[in-house]
Image (cartoon, rainbow, N blue to C red; front, side, top):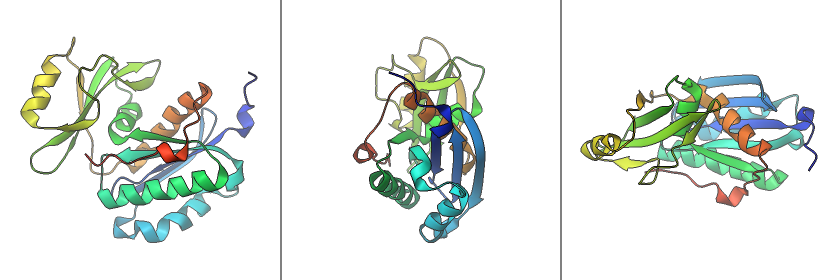
Length: 209
């Protein structure tokens, strides 16, 4: 199959997992622009307006795909971001890629270690955790994991799980605001797009834990 020219492979990423909205626009592997701004409780009121301003002078029809963070994160913010992305993908027949906030953070930092674990604070003394292998500059879920990646853990359970890994991973903790990691969503989506993946918008669901 003949690849689509890179000039027509615009991608838009939306990271709305908390009080900070992150947006990134790319053309193939090239990041064109990005922004991260605090929206607080006003996300629902400003998201559509901000998306239109950020995308200009491009139109929605110029996009080849969308990418959105599915969580973990704020229940309300995730629901708003995913709902908006699903509506756009449905209206313009765009593939919609989703990635966890943990994988996106690992991709954003690009640690030198080949195996990394990422945690995010949850409620009731628990945490969200996932393990990723860095291969070819991409953070990919560790395929040898004996339990599902990106899940809610009790701290002791998480430590026991890490002890079963074949090597000690580099341990990362996500910050409160992850909007600046939106470019990592584009990188992950571009890799799958280039490999031929075209996920249907219906498949995009949030992860609340």
